Image (cartoon, rainbow, N blue to C red; front, side, top):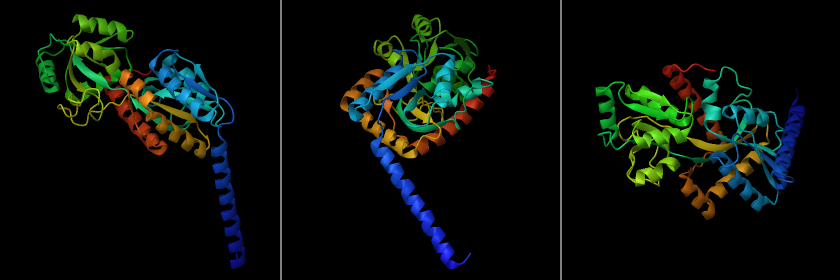
Length: 328
């Protein structure tokens, strides 16, 4: 190829790149031009639904386009995930998720109707909801180290509740067991409400659970908080140490809610959605609502979110394998 042909080829490539960039910018500037559909893997009224509606309302206020919430609960989020994955990647189909759908489900189910990495493009992590390690007041411990020592001195005698196999507080418990070597009896319940009833009654003594459900009982002295499972301390309880600080280095469970789009959604639209969600996080009325839910905003760029999902998938795969949980 002679020098003139090389220069001509380079000019064509450069022109194509400029046109593509300009087209992408124009697409992002005009977006959205019609209603946006958000799939929610839970019934109306739950935490995932509430957060999706907060974002949807603000999208509408900012862009003047209606946001339609499609609640598709059931099967640990797989029904909604499959529908979202098979939707058009045009920016008008979005999926509000909780972390387990992409990070834990792949290890709990032999076959999923979606690929958590290949089928979705990350948009943003919206908030984290902290899980707190608590004990019934009858348990004579006031720290994580004391709880570990007590559990090891009385193997199998402490009962630890969860809302069921595979849910976030169960995973918190299994990771804690694996990292500390404690031996206690796991009591799975069909949901958080019956587990909390028995915890408050002293039938079970230990539990990880979300701050929303625990906060009033901690304040009333009916439960004793020992640590928070998140990587950093939380603003709602700044004096409460993390589990890692309290004696289990490296322990971290981040229960988060975020948004993804079908794979292939234009990057310019992904960036616009991410920027809008970050703006929503900072709104005073939104922050007030999130505070009441015990939720804290997180700023994760889409690329960082993608890497984080892969790391979390590997971590929970090991925890589930070590716990001997058989994929369904």
